[in-house]
Length: 371
Image (tube, rainbow, N blue to C red):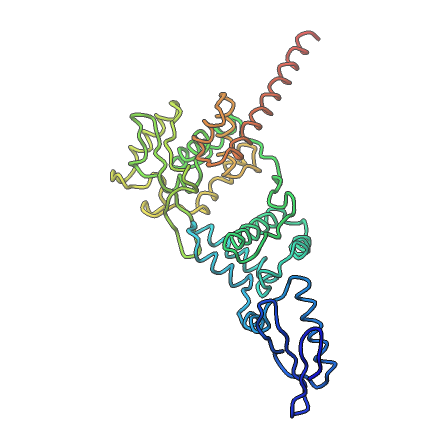
């Protein structure tokens, strides 16, 4: 055995060489295997000494145990994350599709700790700009999952740092329906659908909330709709649950001019049961399918000169109408069932745009008088 400044090298009877040294923990540590030559043993000791000098030393036997541990991949963690979340059925389906089609093909087998900011940027750039909403949703989901991995101490930091990647600009500006257009749409709809059009617009209710409204939810004495549930169509059928968010559980005041129509509609219902659906399917019992509504809504919107108007745009129209009355942000959030001010703020801006349009038309009137 030769004397050395660091470590020991011993030639064994097998003609191979053993290397060992006393570590910072004052224990004697052997190399994990013997070496063919003395030079190989010396190189191993030199590497160990550099680790000690750099402050990154770990006992060789601990390194071996660490290497045997199963590396946690993104795919494994994402599955655990999704299974442990209390999500609405549609939201769960949405996340499932984003994972299967957009995230897992790139990250599934990648160790969580190996996902770098550069890898995220490359993936994000590879999605392209053709589908901005999808790309925004995918990035937001990836950032959320990796943020939870930070909280669970699986990774030291979140590698998602692309500024603005979780936001998306509205693809097209929604033009709310005018009062005349609303009246034209309602008039062109079959009679049993007309109250649905008016509640979607004047009360800004979502389709899922309207389709689940029951007789007991319509308080015409006090002019209030009690929104307590919503229905969505999931992969395995319809699901009735609470509204989209906790803020969606609300009471919505009915504009007085709608009360006579709603009284007539309620009186015409086949069932007087408190649980009877206000707007059922053709069988009178089950929930109305969106496709059934669209079959009569599309011709009606065309008749009103608004073939671009989507059903959800009626809710947008109602929100803008409410904002034009001078409703505060809190008022709009309460009426629309929004839990954050961002969405409600859009309708205030839309109302301001409409007010500016009114001002321009007033000036045009004045110009005509003085011409």
